[in-house]
Length: 361
Image (cartoon, rainbow, N blue to C red; front, side, top):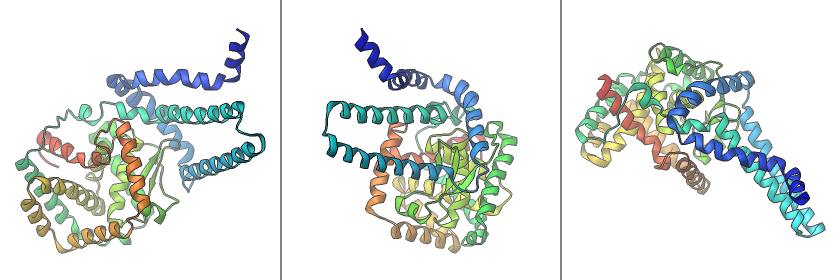
């Protein structure tokens, strides 16, 4: 009995954290509870608090946090190697490092889910807008892509000119988009803005990301080293994560809903440009002739932006990006997105459902 009590005392933190894991998992299984009590209840306060706490800092605290964690892990690994060389790989030492690793992993899992991750299990935008996503019909997809193509052409006065817009204006413009969207969709309320440049810049190009959300600091990170035509929509996409839309297809769709409310043609062009590329790629798999006709019908300046985007992707292809893509694909599959990185393109189904329900995009 005394041995048992001693074990509990010595491992109290690990046992306490491990006891919470089943409770979090059980809560995640009830999407109605998650939607009503977490995503629309607890989370807005958590996200708002974190954005207020870190948003005023001019640089990315999330990136600094990740760099600090990497430095600590490298230091601990180095110390562990020295300790093993000096004392041998004894059972107490093995347990010491195993316990530390378990506390780190379980603690990260719990923090991730409590601070944001449970949003993966919510009912989401379909529930809020009464949308039903049917299988994609080729005829309807042709209509969708035609509308997106025409909108993209219509706002193409900003094609190739987004390099002239300061990044700070892009960030503020994205915040303004949500202020406008809230009037029509109150659930898109966004307070305490925290949209920042990623500290990694061009390194992010080789890693294959244009932006990301940090769940531990609630910052929206934008890689401003990607082609400028993407910046406005990426900013709106990452803000969608901030207000609780964790799944990538939903963040794409919510970002589009917000961006299309903008009074700034640059945002309208960026949003419709991005959605057209997703939709036309889906159409190409079903009707390549129609998809190719759409591409030929784009204005020359839009076609030039597409060429620049392709050249950018070719330039920064790397073995590291493939490894990151594979790891991220696995991460998405583990978080209620069985199609992995292809989840982003599922925004096309949301666009079709919205068009069928509300009549236009």
